[in-house]
Amino acid sequence: MKKNNKNNLLNQFGGLFIAIIILAIFFYKNDEKNLINYSKQNYINQDSGKETINGLKEVQIFDQKRKESETQYAQPFEKNIMIKFPSDGAQKGTLQFQTSDKDAVFLVRDKFTNNLQAVIQLPKFSNTEMKVPLGEYIIEYATGDGEWQGLERLWGYSTQFYRSNTQHRVYRNDHENGYTIHGTGIVLNAPNGYTPERINKNEFIHPN
Image (cartoon, rainbow, N blue to C red; front, side, top):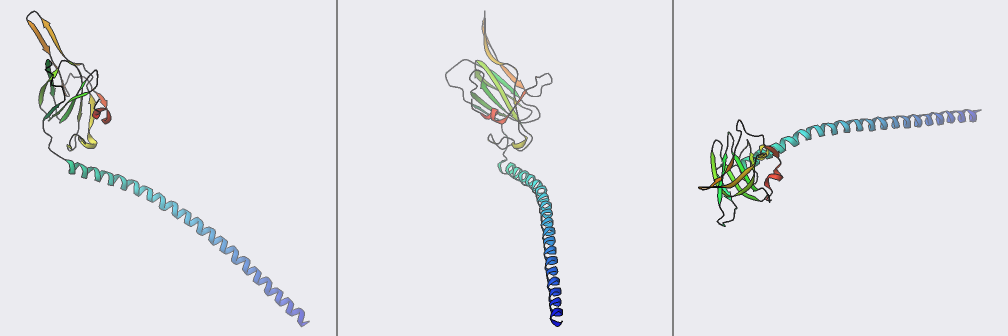
């Protein structure tokens, strides 16, 4: 009888022990699942916040570097006429340039070859002229509101590029008393002027 009681007691303890193990496994699995879900949610929240913060920070850093670059390379904008026409004694006429409320850089290209023949830096509210061989030309120009940083960087981010859409022809007209050479030119923001074509920087700076 005692033996049976002992066996029953062992069986009860054994069953209780197994039940405890099963519950422990259940709670462990449940806690592990909750931990994984929490970790995932926390990662998503952190990642989302990270992207937002980094996006804002990236713009701030980029703009700061841009301003530092403008300050570093800033220089006075001065009138300068640079030409690459051959010194072959060809007959010449006049090209005229006039700015308005902004400094400008003008380019003169041969219409048929697209070769860059002259670069003119002209301060705002001023005008100039230059002698060029007879022919037809394309005039492009750039302006900007930022700091002038030289011909490589121009006015940085604020630079805008244009191409004149009028005919720029320097030609000779023969008549009884000899001949007349007719010039051409460009006046920026003239009230009755033509709307220029917008171009990009690559089009503006290419040599031909």
